[in-house]
Length: 402
Image (cartoon, rainbow, N blue to C red; front, top):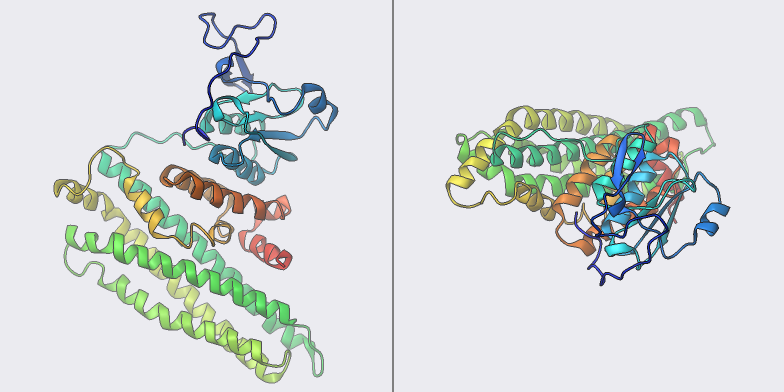
């Protein structure tokens, strides 16, 4: 990720006594946080808040200053919410140095301005708990084809994990309704209409993501795997996609039926039991399908990329181009449904996906919109829910939705 916004004209700022001017030839000291060093060339005072005002407030609050349209500032904000290590305050500031955000880890720390990776490493150094928010050091790939294949494979696997967990969450909710129906006894109703409506939204969003993921595979990945390997290698998974659609539509209709029935009635309970059985079957089929893709098809992606290069369809300029194409193909998942999708990932998986998306989304305005929507949803959640159970996180956010 580059600068947050077009860099303003550099103004010469007065230097503090005893400190070198930026751009001077004087050797600059460094600021160290738990063994992570950042040069003073990356340090700056936020022009929006005075030191006295900051120091007067809670010393443990982490502060991020940056443009409201800056993807690095929003990424910092999301990462700190996942870290859930300290209270967080974000102050929009168009005057951030060089158009980059400023991070202040506590009132006792200096304000630091640097690249996304530098600032995320500082967060990891100060707050050592999981997840690690800075991108990991990636081993050098054997070839550009291997690097491109690894990115797409990671993207696909993480999408699989999110879909699996959301199906798990919906199935658990239906099982809970069935259990309530058994305990309620005659004339009592313990299932609320709002629960059924939220269930419908949850499943509808999961279905949208799964269908868009399947279309991405069918248009971007499977055809070239067939050409690079041998005819028929993708036939089984394509057939499974076809079988899953009627199952998914049947479940959707069962949920619609629940909405029309009297809560707690024998017929309501019967439909809920059938729905639970269908969801369990879909879960089992989906897990097996994803397992086959990951073991049989994803290892062939490097061969696919080599074939594309030999045919002159791609160049060696960017190993992220293929993953960028996959991200762009899933328009709904990476816009309206992005917070939903991300709540299906464990925190460390979410950081992996966030890194992929930030590297592969070329439209800065769209990237900011994605990060902003996720941050706003995470701010409504208890940190312990974020860390411990993705499906409980989404259920919690559903309950809090208007």
